[in-house]
Amino acid sequence: MNTASTKTFRRILALLLTLLMTVSLAACGGNNDGDKPAGSSGSQGGDTQTPDDGAAQGGQLAAEQVLNLKLIDLKLLDVNDVRNANEFQVLTEIQEGLFRTFTNEEGTDVVENAGCTSYDVSEDGLTYTFHLRKECVWSDGVPVTAQHYVDSWMRLIDPEEAFSYAFLATGIEGAEAYYNGEGSAEDVAIELIDDLTFSCTLTVPDAAFIKKVGMVCFYPVRKDLIDAAKAADADWTNDYTLHVYNGPFYISDRVLDNSMTLKKNETYWNADSVTLTQINMQVIDEASTAAQLMESQQLDVLTLTDVEYVAQWQPLVDNGTFTHIQTTPASVTYLVIDQHPAANGGPSGLMGSEKCRLALSLAFDREEYNLMFYEGLYTPAYALVPFGMTVGDTEFRSKVPAKLEEYQANLSDPDYLKNLFEEGMKEAGVSGTAADASLTVFAYTPTVLTSNQLEWYKQQVESKIGCTVNIEVYPDSSTWVAARNEYKYDFYVMGWNGDFNDPMTFMELFVTDNGYAKFMGGFSDSEYDELVRRAGSSQDDAERLQLFAEAENILLEKGGVIPLYYPQNQMYHQSYISGLSFPMFGAEYEFSRAQIMEH
Image (cartoon, rainbow, N blue to C red; front, side):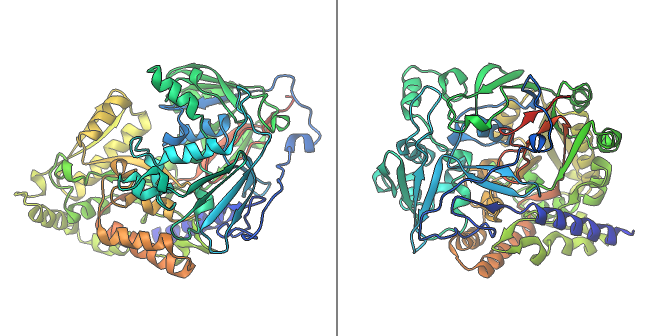
């Protein structure tokens, strides 16, 4: 196939795969379109069941029910302050909120009642009332109550805490004013009704609200323990011994930056469905080491970061040693560009220029990147929102062309990017030519793969624009974070996994002063902000799709972010593991129903 037909084929393939993975809400007020609660004027109830595939096939359980996993160690254990995929993974298993997500035999997300048994939605779509499960208790025997949810939601929007995910709750009446320091906590429309019931009222209907409140940041908390830890000047954020747990497992041991052990939580309301007794998690830096541990059965589940093993492990899949699960997540990897006003254009002084940013965005050959580093298994990204994200029943990418593709014809002119960059330099008040400019990309403790990628970024920019690119490597994450916060970069690599099935989960990241703005480069545009705001409050799917499309085009045309690729997860597990789920949203994999079969 020629380049054009290959791109088309990959996009069609990615679309088909992601449509197969589209989320559906079940049992707790949802239906297959995933956007409008079923029977919203009345109570919803009941629970779905995920089949125990190993037992269903007549297999016998192994005597030892211990799962071995790779760990990327957590910076925090605070559900309200959750930020990263590794934190979502662990916190989802040791704590529990209103819902829990599994996948069915077709690989589709199924959201089950967990902390709630049902919820009601008022006829005007503004008030949500949640009815909690009376069997839920914390690991210290204290019942989980509605007060614990109210405390969590109020803490999430506490301006003194400044949690990154607070923006997800600001649609609640009074919440935004309270978070911005312009209102009081008493004016926030989150109401405790009784020990097992609470409600909240929105300022305007939100088509994605029920998808949001199932997230980790909305899980209940024990304010009494948080307050006690603060009074004792203890590290509640990251000291597991200060926490109690209401999920399927609890942390029994932890060695920072090395390992973590989870054990079955016998006080969990649904403990009878949990077969695993222990999960051993260890930090493994190199992909080759993790692969060797999988091959020797010292790891039971692994998501590949080095896709060369896809071909190498095919014989192990064919002979039944490994099970291969390929999923197309709601995820995009991109380059963050330093646009914070305080940064003054980054070290180069040029990243405040829209033309310089756009030239940088267009300099990267995404097709080459995919082939060189990911064996052609990923999908090159010419826009922000990934395939598979829906607005109502409509798949967003099937209706909205990728804006950056429109510029590809210009690249036939070898001087186009250099000229565009130098126009940006003049507008930024920086004298000289592209050859006089120097950009900085940075990373910390890179692997062999990421080191090669950094060199590729450098080669692409230097050969196509003509400026110099400096690679800065920091010894650890803390020094890198300090450098990021001091704006010592022009661009760096980041990715985002969607939190719920709506383009909003990507678009709101770039709204001015969003809780994640400091991680996203600080893009700010009033027209973009207004379009996203209108999309958030509209109840018309066609209008929402159009508003999101217009906003995304602004973000891309102004070089607010540089999308690189949409990944495909290459997941492997030992074939003696059954009952694993691989949700499109939430934790990368859900193992609370997993079982170890005889082998």
